[in-house]
Length: 293
Image (tube, rainbow, N blue to C red):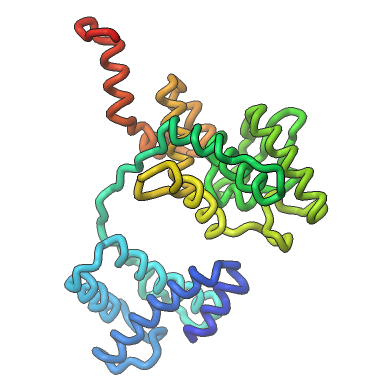
């Protein structure tokens, strides 16, 4: 059954092989626990009591709550698959509450780091222009990685310098495009059409298939690893940088909320964390007793 579920993740859910393997490892770990402790040969027969015992054993082994939640999420996804295929009536994890995890403070890229990366994104070939377009769009619009992956050529209006984005819960929003980003996209589309012709999706692989999440992550991580020593260098950090830099420059919270596609201000306030250096700068410029340099 686990093998069947793995095929479902790859073929139906269009997830990467890496993601499918991660799900499979989590399920196999739970399978081993059930076999050793309950002589249970099929994990689809497990009840919540047995699952809870597994969670307790993971906690006792010193695994972080965040990792445990991910493993339980894999199991929950498997049970939902069984329900969808009518092989299970009740999901034993339906009322499960995730373990509490400490909130992580995302540290955005500095403006200097951003400028260094953007300056390094040179080249007129298809691959170089695709990377430049991806990074510039993520930073200049603050869109999510999934939103970028789902962009279609028809979503672009380069004459009006706007872009239609389909966000969470199929909520559409229109985002403005900087002139520099518009120019990069024009060059990218020109090279793309020469190589692959017109495609439904804006960003595609060399074979013309829709770009996938792992590839977007690798592109961002590759270029920012050259200029930044931050531990996390992901598309979401670019989204965080977009919001933080706008707020640092005086943009109001409501405007940033609309650009990010948040349904409430509470979600946007996560991005109000500013760097200590920026706070020092504001303080030194504003306080009457500070020594201006």
